Amino acid sequence: MAKYNEFAALYDELMNDFNYEEWANYIEDIFQKYNFGPRNILEMACGTGNLTYYLARKRYNIVGFDLSSEMLSKAYEKLNRFKNVMLLEQNMVNFKINKKFDCILSVCDSLNYIVNSADLYRCFQNVYNHLSDNGIFIFDINSYYKLKEIIGNNTFIEDRDEIFYTWQNSYDEKNDICTFYLTFFKKDDGGLYHRFEEEHIEKAHKEVEVVNLLHKVGFSKVDVYNAFSFESNTEKSERLNFVALK
Image 1 (cartoon, rainbow, N blue to C red):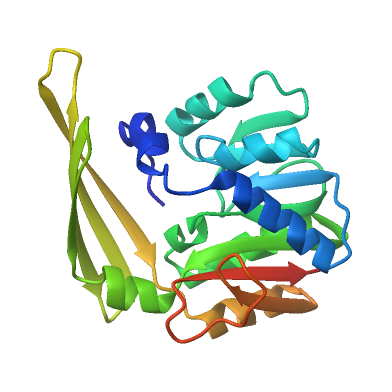
Image 2 (image 1 turned 180 degrees about the vertical axis):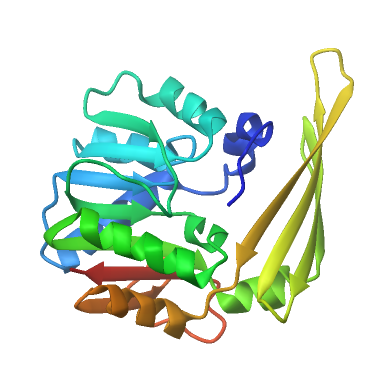
């Protein structure tokens, strides 16, 4: 799992095409569909707190954690006014919190960063143990198809007003691992560009393997949907939403 360092300062600007308010509304649609009314939510890999912000406004009690202290610092700037939010620095695989939650969330393909099946199992087992009876686990992943066929071995370039970056990718077919090599050029106040690099690694998890692991740790029911809908996913779905019931 990657730590976001200088990238944390740019994260919100680069992710401005994600509508986190709609994401929060979709999560509430899931609650309604499953006739579920949680009050206490654990958000894994909360990043800079974009989703947390909208959920906090809906008055859920939220504990959010992330591995990156830099991302948590940005999250704190957004969320420190909320009395119903607590932020922690923890790891998705071996997190330990001395309470149980009605709902556990992970969004924006965070679970793709767990590249080892044994670690993914440990993560799911930890989630199960931190859920209240009849609790719900909601998460999404970049699909196997997206990481292998769309991102794959391709290179993307984007030029924004203050940022230019290249995104070069390498796909390891033997291990279904996609490595992202990101090079950023950020304009400073003097008009000069500062260069820095990030490397991120995501695992192309197969849907059936994820579902099997969830059942193995004890989840009684697992549903999978095409992104932000309640439609069945297809072979070319790029983002899969999972709903697992304890």
